[in-house]
Image (tube, rainbow, N blue to C red; front, side):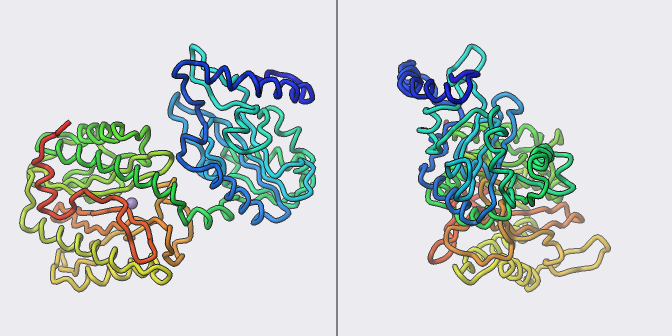
Length: 455
Ligand SMILES: [Mn+2]
């Protein structure tokens, strides 16, 4: 759209383009929205602006320079979470600079994009591209060509005592995309301290906005659609991968283009492997299948686990263990007191309830143990754009925070692995389940497996 013109002439062309280009793009019948446009995020531009302002304040006299990754596999580009959090932009190779007051840039922030022309071609869709359209779409002014970024920001970098970038920083950065950013900054200002922007953004991301909660609910609904597909396809002889296919069909029906993490469909002995990857293993009657999945919608992930009996009915022993895991999930979700409870408290509660249960099982060494012995992981993690979302695990639960509650028991000697997981938002009063409507009690699970596909 702008073409390889010097910046001064560019201004004139920008003005002309401002008049022509919107008319052109709107004129295209049913023309697709520009790929990468923040409107696809479902979040108001004001939210992104408020986050940039808060980050600018937190950075003090330092500057922020976040350079997103290029497109990978065609159609599967996923923006870097922190860059998306600040812009809503999901175009490849986008970069954002936020500069302190009195900076030579003469703006609070600048966005850089590759000049893709802003129009669909025979080979691809129209991407958000530098120019007035992008200024209007993002609320960030200016939006300039990525190729001009280093020249334009050199005076700012030269002046900055600290530069916050997308990590990692330090030794680990050498082998990543961040390493090249660090080298370029050092070449301009060898004295600048280079820090991971995550240390400033992670605390901000802990509390979700109303629009973010809506996206997590939508991701939860797509995840449930996938789980129903799993329930209806699990039967003796089905492979884990075949069940995964039904899960993905459910995700896509509900608008999830991607998964938040690889699907876990673990049958029989694989049910006791926490992060098993779905395989060609065929399941058999009498076994359990742990299905731990998360659809991604508008860059937010769901994370739900259910455990199914392959033959459609739990054995009495499986049912005993299942009911205990479910009781612990219920107790933990009811124990959330905003402003008081921590994830550590929930973990301690789960461990105590498992220990106090009259149930027993044999450990690998053959000795009989209380059930807390078989609770092999934490009960919770933060959830958001990343399935294991950022933020201190020591934080007290406050309204707007989103967590999973996922107790599990794993008894390899009995071939029993059972996990039940749902997503919860902390409210003013307690915890609200963001993944409602999917049965979690044993009878409800058996009934769901018998239900016929209605679509
Ligand atoms: Mn989880």
